[in-house]
Image (cartoon, rainbow over all chains, first blue to last red):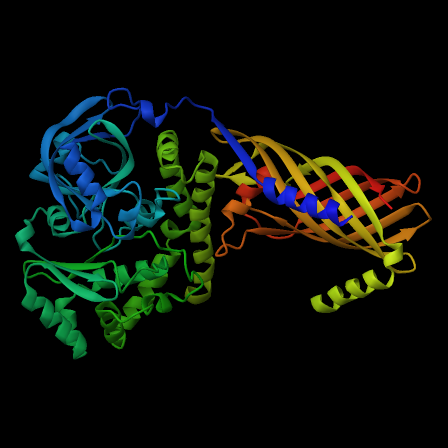
Amino acid sequence: MKKIFSTLFIAILLVSCSEFEEDLKFDTPSYKQLTVENVETDLPVINITADEDEVAEMLKNYRDEIEIEAHFDLYRNKELKIDNELIELEVKGGRSATFALKSLGIKFDDSVDNDERQLINPEKVKSNHSIEKVKSIRLRNSGNDFYDTMLKDASYTELAISLDLDFELTYYEPAYVFLNKEYYGMLNIRTESNSHGVSKLFGKKKKNVTMVKINSPGEIEIKDGDEARVYSLLDKIEQKDITGLKEEIDISSFIDYMAFESLIDNFDWPNNNVRFYAIDEGKFRFVLYDLDYVNEIDVEDDPMETINNGNSSAMIDLFNVLYTDQEFKTAYDARIREIFKDSRFSREAFSAIIHKNMEAIEKDIPAHLEKYNNPETLIEWYQNVDNLKAGYNDRFEALKEYLN
Amino acid sequence: MKKLLFMFFICAFFSVNAQVKFNVEAHMGYAFNHEIKVAEEKVESNTVVMTQFGANVQIPIYKGIYGETGLYGKVYFAKGEVRNSEFTSTTLRFDIPVLVGYHFLDKYRIASGISVSNNRDFEDFNISKQDNLRINYLLKGGYAFNKKWQLVALFQRNLRTSPDLYLLNEPKSTVSLGVSYTLN
């Protein structure tokens, strides 16, 4: 009898597995057959041409910040919009640079006239922003969302755009990308959150911008501009000089930024992924980016806990100093509730954004899934899209406890 | 509580070993979900046929009451469609049930309990995830034709929330009919 049980047990363990086969209802060529010329899509098609050895070296040593010279073509509906434009090409990203499909930074030799050449056509641009001229873009692999939906960061950014919040952000459009005419994958064209990107939003030069970045674990990095001004700001935070801080900080931008990031529970923030900047002598304003860890971890947290998450950061200190000021506290508490109760922040509104973005790439993503094989099937991708909505719904439910 | 139950089964097993029955069993049935949605669309024509085979041991506990455990393999054959995707799948899972039952009117028995089965393939097990295993509620009935052969009916329902994706190839509920043969 023992033999029967043990044989059965071993047999079941050995063969316990599943096979899943999927057929799509629409025709989609294998990624191996895709070429710049034959791809049928409404999305922009980008081809980057560069020395093959240099490309291989750059992709292999992705931590070395290797910049290579390359040329950039962009097609829309098979019409060549950008022809052989000289660029500097570089692998971008932190952990996501380890993924098979790496994000690429593209710096154009000359600013691109976006109205004429349609480098990026986002659905909506904030009224105070301009993307008429673009100096650099990123072809982004959606960061840590690469193995899930390719939609997360872009959709949360679109939510912020729809709410017309008072900070800067990056614009989005998905694209087919070929490297030396070989299908590289689907990447998201994003305007940059750096000094190039922000200055162009306001028709300014990079030299006009003071840009500060906070990297994990809360380290300040002055990227460009007036260092003395940044140190003065940090000093005012340390001295808890509320009056001085109000003179340096665009309070409306700060409130919207802190409220939105904490509402969407960005776990990889605020001791990382923070950028703030000033143009000339203007006040410091804030830039939203890197939202691939939102509404994933600790979604039950009070927004205040999200802000005070993790290690110390100048951003946490700045908020906590200003929050001791009654005028700021009243304004912040009112604003976070106002955003939460705005119908554009509702579950239905976010679900509609996700659904629209899903439909926009639904027929283009199979080639990408075939190449990178994670998720393996369109159904699994659908499920990941549902999980993205579910994460938002869970957070929204949790927020009711704190903000109603 | 779990420890007590375990000890009870062990004691019962050794004290009444002589009356223990060993059976092999085979089932065929239909697996279904009440309603599942993927990408905001109801999953259409999700047809899943299930077969189950394995062996069990029935241990008399007290008068007509008995405990039952065993080991089964369950195979699900599924096909369906979601939005732009049509799929077919074959899924084999192990299943370890623990039931308490009651014999009545000589030929009938009814039992209820739970089973543990794998929700993921073993090669995809991930200890950081909570969806590696399923816990199922079981309701089982039997009718004995004679001393060796029984007709058995089984209802199984997954008690843990699984992502809907797993329910496409292995739905939440299963009803099946089968035969059981006593080896001793």
